[in-house]
Amino acid sequence: MTKGKGIDIGTMNIVSAIQDQKGKIEYKRIRDAFLDVPINAKKMLKLHDGVSFIEDDEHLLILGDQALEMASVFGRKARRPLQDGLINPNEIGSIDVLAYMLKQVLGEPSCKGEVCYYSIPADPIDQPNRNVIYHKGVFERILTQIGYEAYPSNEAEAIVFSNCTKEGFSGLAFSFGSGMTNVSLVLNTIGCLSFSLARGGDWIDSGVSLSTGTNQARVTQIKESGFDLNNPKDRVEEALSFYYKELIQYSLDWVAKKFLQSQNHFGLDKPIPIVVSGGTSKPDGFVEFFQSVFDRKKKRFPIEISEIRQATDPLNAVAQGMLIQAIQEHEE
Image 1 (cartoon, rainbow, N blue to C red):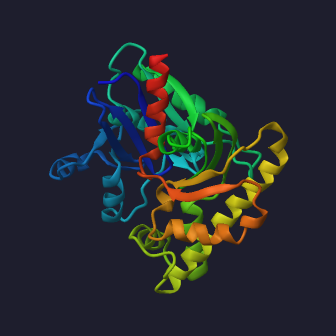
Image 2: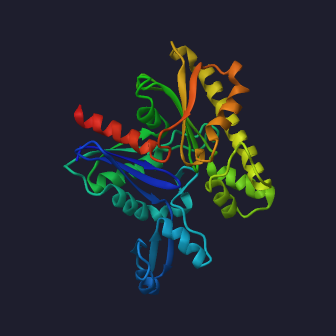
Image 3: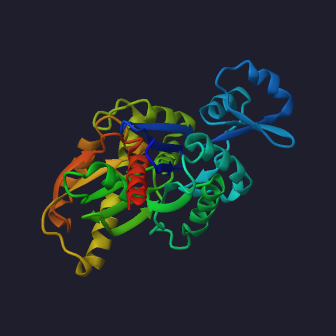
């Protein structure tokens, strides 16, 4: 096994990336959710293959996808350790659950002090009272306790590392996550501009739910079922397309604003690609939809763009970028 591991710690999923001796990358994922059930449910859970759970003093904690499935059985809502891209302040007690999840997908270090790069968002530019200091520190502590030498790295920058090799690791990446949208401009491996926005997939789902009177869980299901952004078939899908358009416009406007504020600090000598990634970018036709929104702003956009493309593996792109940086750290 190659030394060094990467992990993407997202609001919806935690994904690890580990490379074997043949160069093949293995990804492991766990849904970032859990459900507490009475301790006497243990016998029942043992009848269900693949249900992952841990015990605390008074409850069983069902983890991952099964937590969402079992929540409907018990008529409850699964608990989320992360909210809006950061540790959920209402679930501080779930940090032990997060530690267990990270160990599940990473395993033990393959050597003493093995490097592990972990994803963190940038500070949300549209909510200046929030920052990532506590979030970053908690995950550094968890990974250190497991036995890794932990390095935080921006999640959008990681997409450039995993998807812009042919451009010399230069690109403008948009990571459309569940809790946040992260944006990063990288030039020749150097991060020049990074920020996050406190809008993502959850913001879309909530807005569509309120606007159409549709249960939010149902909205999420429709969004994740593969509907076509460019060809909405009913009122909910139309509302989804409206909110997606607003999110993309909002993201592009902030890029333009921040670039114009910072352009004296760096220069672009050639066009660079926009790479979009993240679970919220999964609907059919997302790149074409993004392109149509971008085209209306293209003349006034301060960065010359060569193309707009989706990451080759949107759900694993961040974890892969973290792995690339971890391996490089070991080699140095």
